[in-house]
Image 1 (spheres, rainbow, N blue to C red):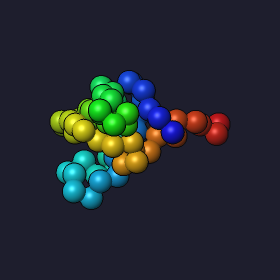
Image 2: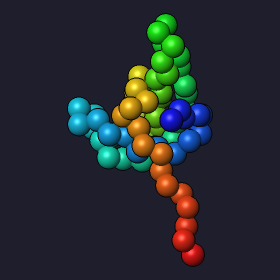
Image 3: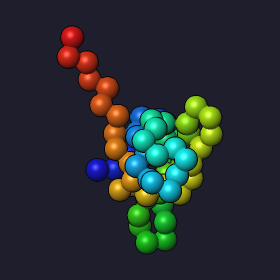
Length: 64
């Protein structure tokens, strides 16, 4: 699953102060190996160079 700019995601990285927090992708960068890394903006900061496998899409569907 790939992500795009403006997607809402949850970061899963036990080494990050933003582990478990939801944020918005503000930049998508492609590495020289063809993989994507992301910059995620949170309410009180940002995390850069986040690999795709550390992200989970926020489920924004309402069952109402």
